[in-house]
Length: 114
Length: 304
Image (tube, rainbow over all chains, first blue to last red):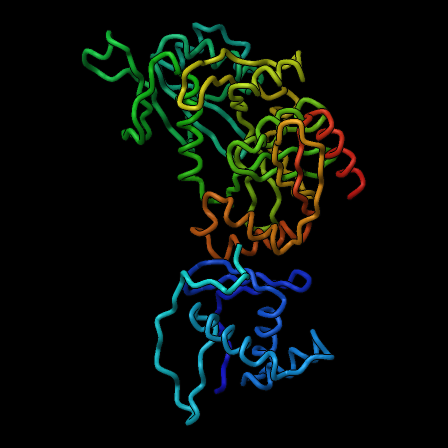
């Protein structure tokens, strides 16, 4: 499964140290991204697209002694949460544009929203 | 000429006629009323304000009037009218000034969207501002009033007005509504401060309005650069505790503590980003006003 970040002219992402704050132009809500979520969003915007690659990248950055496999399930869950917020979507294998999905504006990132 | 230089009957005449204009800094209001004794209270708490002719554009045009009918004689009430509409239920007639103040605040909070409005006190010293965002009951107004009576300039005790373009803090200088125990606390803390009459049995208990100092009113047009964000929390008998807050968390707290953040959307996000980026952010728990004021002064000086 390949994922991509949905860019939008009114999207705002600002890093404050390890965490980040995002203005979601679909829901007009502001979300706090914890260190893991902020890193995943950065990696997606750099072009990494599947959970395995994201896990490897995350492990190298935040837990060099850890195993990427240990993070894959957590990252998949996080990507689904970001998808629920309308911030990422799944890229179809055949390269077609994905079906439009209604975002879930009230969804929150686990442990990431005050 | 200042409002305090008018006699009570002259204030009353303006209220009954074209209206009395108020210059708060970034906002202006015009009030008409024929309610007895309101003029006297206004003259006390707005004494240092410039007299503004009731002409030109006003952000808020309000009228306080007695409703018609038998209620004129039996437990009389007064209503707050805003552009011909009554946004909320009448108050007992004797609580005229609290109704006017509450109504003006309500109008500003609901209509004033040129700037980002935070629920916060703001004071300034040497051009550098301290923002005190908090929910009601946190001691925000009392702490803001205390600072304003210990060498800080008051910009606002209720609305942190953030200019969208550069996140400068703009004055919206209004009398501070002190409630219940805070009234006596402030009398002891600043014996020379001008307090209006006490109004018992309002919806928030006893309320009295503290007049802004003339030094603050004299600088209604002067913005301030944000330097510190303190989230205050009064806890009786608590030792003072100052805890740094990550800027990301301060951002979220500010965005949820605003009157119009969601309305302004990306513009508000950009303004809060500038605000938080330029400030040190702390949570402040305090139980003693003098101690809190001294700490804030020292913190502001050391953060320069």
